[in-house]
Image 1 (cartoon, one colour):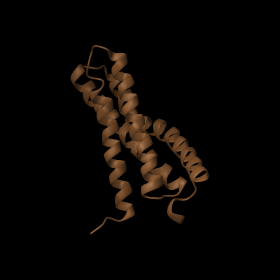
Image 2 (cartoon, rainbow, N blue to C red):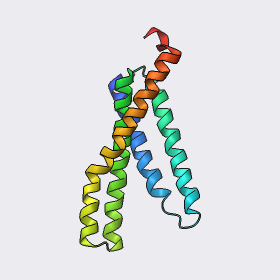
Image 3 (cartoon, one colour):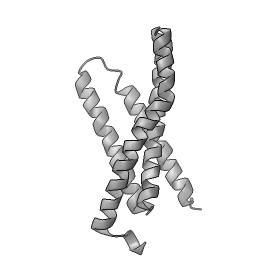
Image 4 (tube, rainbow, N blue to C red):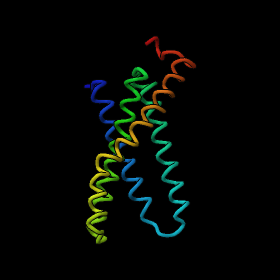
Amino acid sequence: MGESPGQSWIRAAVFLGIGYALVGIIFAVPVTHVQLWRWAAWASSAIGYGSHIAYERFRLQNSPHSAALHVAFAVALGAFGLAVGANIHSLYSGSTNQHARLLLLSLGIWPLITAVPAFLVAFGANLFLVRALGNVQGR
């Protein structure tokens, strides 16, 4: 029994969103070679982002708008996960009240400031793929 296209994009977006958050949290742990770990986190996230765009375009054959929304949702979910991680970390690190209040704002702001550019880039990439390669399998 196969899954519906709706279930398919949700599963991929949640999987990648969790992946983005885990990469951001885990790759921030090492205290040596910090710049190398940051580059590795960026590279891992870029691979996931590009793979998600390709999955939406070629496997699910979604329209550029739908595909970009799905990709942006995954990015926003990852940013929300990072914000949750930052808030939890602040509880254990003894942050000031002002810092803790600002981190609470991150729960809404980080997903927004990452989802908008993620949508725009994914939409542009999907438009390019549609124009360059045409619709896959006549769709």
